[in-house]
Length: 176
Image 1: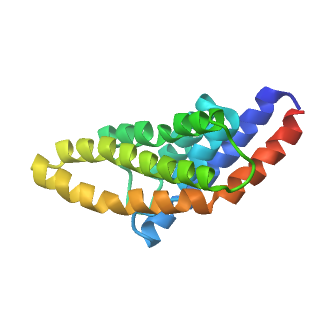
Image 2: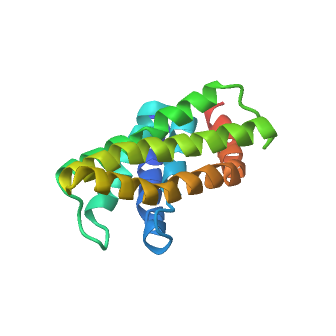
């Protein structure tokens, strides 16, 4: 199987995982493992496949979730926000990546989780506050709820480090 077809297939599967794992955000409010999936995609295959995973997965989620579709400006902000996880994942791969869950890797993953959640919510919460006025009370209230995502990402990313290492090792076998 050539590399392009392999990447397209993986993007489709991981986008489906983003869609499915986004249901966590309904049952466990604002806790969403999809951030890690997009981060992992950027880590494994680079920025653009990771962005594809985030955009396709969140587009499906935003339009076909039980709470109804997001308004178009909010949808765009969600797609931009989740896509930020992919370049962060690609950047982490360029850092001296180690195959074990050492303290440095755990710290890097925790900071990556914090950054992905924070950047996502800065973008989405500003657009949300612009759409649903009054701006400042809505933004401050939204940011308080966003802390759940930021904290959960900061905890989930290091916990899922073995998944990252496992898939990294599997991808090395396919690339060889």
